[in-house]
Image 1 (cartoon, rainbow, N blue to C red):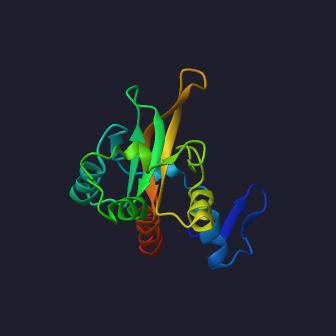
Image 2: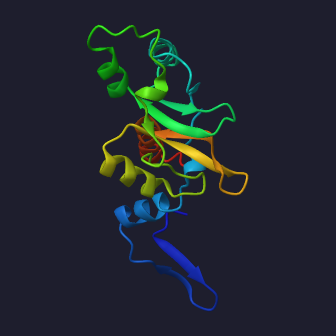
Length: 167
């Protein structure tokens, strides 16, 4: 059960030779995004910067996903994007988020079947807080946001691993 021993017919039990860290690594390499994803927070591209800031604080998230009228992913808004837009004397109620968002194809995405270790590497490499989990719609015409994976989700996985509660 712990992974230190294995069994084979006509051989019996034998020591696998794996250390605790190797067994932990094997366990992590089989966990998918689907196991630890959370609900995405999306806004329409016509929403004002002011409304996006309110949504971000009310939903207590660090990243908003921007969609068009067909619910197709068109952009991402981070805290940094909204802070940058709020500096100065602009009327935030009149600026749509489509002006300040990071646009496709410059968005890093993942799918629910992706391994969580690969997604964690993307978060580290790109130095971002979260990724949209996407599903292709209508033969390549765009992506629908079906979830999100964040640093908080990765931390929850770490805690579950420490408590030996991984799925």
